[in-house]
Each structure stands twice: as C-alpha cells, then as structure tokens.
Length: 174
Image (tube, rainbow, N blue to C red; front, side, top):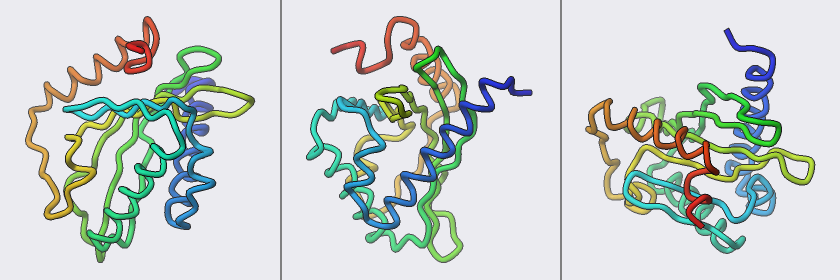
C-alpha cells in the first residue's frame, strides 16, 4: 500500500507523463521542452547523454515523431508503474512505454526509470534511464526485441537507485 507521499508522487508523475504524451501527439515542441529541466540526462543501456540545450531536446522530440511516423503508430504512450518521493525536491518513478499499430503491440513495452526535480515551483524531468539500447531511438528498419535476462534489468535498476544516494546518475558525474 502506498503512503500518502508516494501516492502523491505517482499522481505527479502520471500528470507529467500525460502532459508530455499530449504534447507529443499535438506535435507541440514548445510545450514539450517545458517538461524538462536542463541539463537533462538520458541514459540507455549502452550510452549516456547529457542534453544541455533546447536544440538537444528538439532532436529527442524529432526522433519520437520520426518513430511514430515510420512505425505507423496509432498509439505511443507511457504508463506510470510506481513513484516515490526521495526528498522534498526529488521523485524517482518507473514507467513503461508502449507502441501500438492497428491494435497490435509493437515490440515489448520499454521500461524506464525517471528522476523528477521540483524546480521553479514545478516538477520537471531531470533524467530518464531507458532499459533499451541507444540505437533503438534512431533505427527504424525493425523493432529490436529485447532478450537480456531479468537479472541484468534488476542490476541496472539497482544502479539507478544507488546513484541517488550521492546525487543522481549522469548528473552526478558532471
């Protein structure tokens, strides 16, 4: 059972996910960039990126739009699985992204861990850790099927939570 703070954390992240998804569907980059705090860290299984400018965010937005178009997606959405408040200004949350074409799931859902920070009176995405290879975002010839053992997923998730102790993931390395 979630306590009150964790329930609130989940509601905060659900709202942020829904807002971002609406902006993606509306092709509204100006609104989309307001969901992020810069610099924004994006970690995939085989790479880590720190996006420092709105041009960097525009590339992420364009990749998502390109994926939607190339895969002829009828739906591209993320579902919050869990969220918890680490402190007054930090929420760590998990979600899965699903892609659907004509009522068919395209590949397996992509699980992610996100770090939200309360900055300038609002909750913003500071980092996202995706459990998929970097090339997944830029390769559209076929959808990569993920075959890593569950233990590898758990180890990466443990790294994410461990990194929160002395700062957050990529940003702590800066």
